[in-house]
Image (cartoon, rainbow, N blue to C red; front, side, top):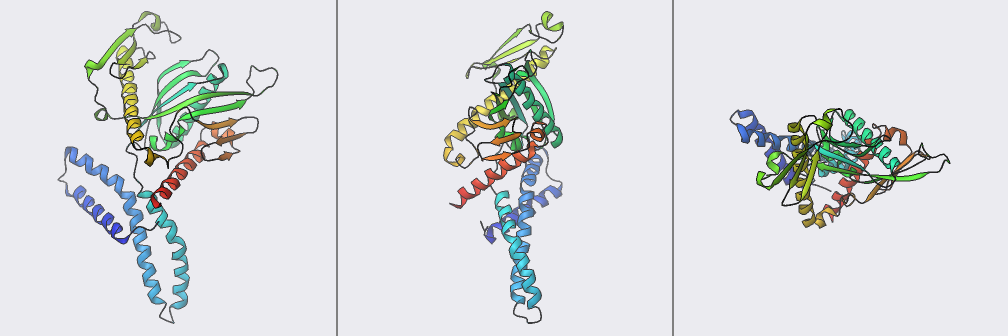
Length: 355
């Protein structure tokens, strides 16, 4: 995809304007925050656009040099190098100019729930959580559990965690869906392979200004927490249940000792779920634009299989199989899958724009 020269000039002009405004020292408050966001979003595009402009200009100069017999040989050699590099630079520019998901820069709420498979599913949910936790550490992100329901055999029936850092949702958003595991459970004496599943949901976490919640729309109950966690769970009404009446969305949190902290975490989860519902409604209205995306975003869709006996992981959406299960389930190896999903999504959106 070739970007017109006029569009590159517009990008350069807009970026120069932003640089001048940022350097003027006259911006304050919301105006400075907005300008900073615009600058951060445009800077990578402007950088690639400048590289493409420079390569195009050099191409023209070299073509003129072909008329000079003394310079022709050198010009032909350099021309070949430029012509080889320019298409990839043009492609990178087109990718940089793709419309951005407004939520890409946001932190995320990671929700993992055991599905079919009983105890083995709970153990697998725990494996998935640790996989994401280690991948997050490699990315320099912070993972903080918000609520969890532990399984008696290990792992989790359900765990919700907040993941913060740079580009969290952009990298994790394609992880939503049903993850399937095939392996011999430790409790299986006959050596038979069992198939279990866990559901992963990755929700963009909004700022408070993104979701306005009327306190009058909330029903808040306190109760005594149950389960493991220390003596306080049986003696303190620290658990919180919040019901958002207009949508009948119910959120509970009982993991902290403090009622205030539990309420804070529950509100955080509630805002995230309401924001996700808003995004789904918007994306539903833009279904045609979403057809190019990897997967449907439906959390009931089976997206990946982890086959332990064969040591392989298959992502069914892009037909990619990697014989690297130990590295992937350990965390760091997940990056190869994440990058492949992002690249496939970019390629499909570029193709859709070119049609």
